[in-house]
Image (tube, rainbow, N blue to C red):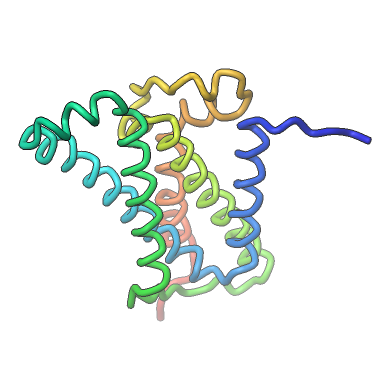
Length: 186
């Protein structure tokens, strides 16, 4: 019997498969809504961490001393909690509805849905691992981050985080391409 040793790569792949499966089994409108929610949640998470670092901490020296001892952990938790809460609220309570004209052929619709499911899954999972690395997704997108030593033994995570800007941009580029080459409104 083969034993699989638990590593960050296994966690990454398992999370990617679960998110991809959920997205692929849901309608395409849900995927586009999740993409919009992901972009908004990333902005909220980064804004919240920025607010804590630049506004709250300078005004509270006691809190600043406590945070300085556990800075990576505190900002990691702040970003993850804000990201998760914003995603949950957006998906469960948002009154935004995505309307799009579907492609006429079922094969094209299936391929578009498959590609979007994969791209959005990669964006969500790489965002989570960027936060787990203790860095900002902005630093990851610019390639200026230094991940903590948790991922040193990983084969997947560091290369994927090194090209985070690609995972951030590709779903948006895909939406534009589908809009340009897709069926026109008559």
